[in-house]
Amino acid sequence: MPEIALQFDIAAPRAVVLAALTTHDGLTAWWTTAVDREGDVLLFDFPGVPEPFRLRVERADRDRVVWTNAGAFPPHWAGTWISWDLADQPADRPGEPPAEGPAGPPAEPERTRLLFRHGGWQPGSEQGVPAVAGTWAELLVRFKDYAQSGKAQPYFVTARRHDAP
View (cartoon, rainbow, N blue to C red):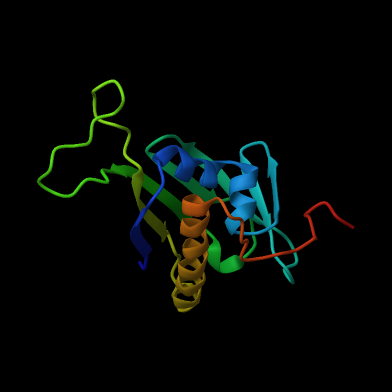
C-alpha cells in the first residue's frame, strides 16, 4: 500500500509549527482560505470542488497531529489518514553543547523536525497518489514558509464555504 512521506526541518519553535496545524489562522495561512470546523471534523473547501474535504482530528498534541478522512469526497482519499510528527531540533552544531538560556539551562530549540505522512490508500486509488504527493509537496513549502516567517500565502484561495448557497 503506498504512502506519501516527507521530512524536513523548520526554523521555528515547535509551538509555532503546531499552531500552523491546529488553528484556523494557521491552516488558512498555508492551505486554503476556506476552513471550518464541525466538532472534531475540519472542513476544507477548495475552488471547483462539489463539497469540502472532511478530516477528523484524532490527535493534536505537542508531538503529533493525526487526521483521518471522514467524508465521501474526494473518493480516492477514502480510508486515508494524515499524520504530522514534530520533534525539537537544536539549532546548535553537532558535537557542541546546547546554548544556555537566560537562566542557565538549555534554551528551547528554535527548530522543529516535521515528518509528514499520508497513508491508508485503498486498492485501486494508487494511481492518484503521485498527483496528491505533488500537491502536498507544494503545500508543505508554503507551510514551512509560513511557520518560519509568519507571512500567510494560502495555496488555495476561495470565497466558497461549505455552508454557502
